[in-house]
Image 1 (cartoon, rainbow, N blue to C red):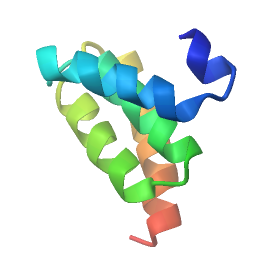
Image 2: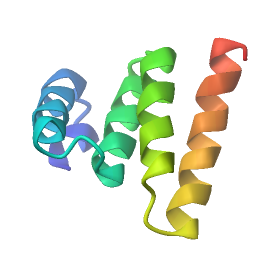
Image 3: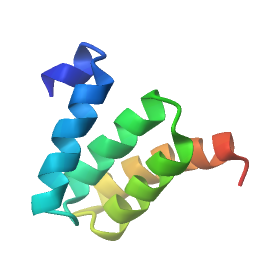
Image 4: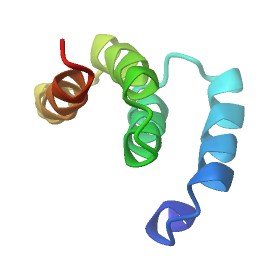
Length: 79
């Protein structure tokens, strides 16, 4: 949401992680967490969130989008 656009990553990540406690497999929340971790250059963490998002993606469009993001962080990690 709004906090991500304002680049307040830490509070945004805290909010997303709090929501994930209630819904740990939620693909949209995991994707958002991955996005924030990626922006913070926490590529290993981002990759883990993207994997959960990918496993629970609701449609092919979401899977494709997450795969692209996941590939980016995998390349940064050097896998």
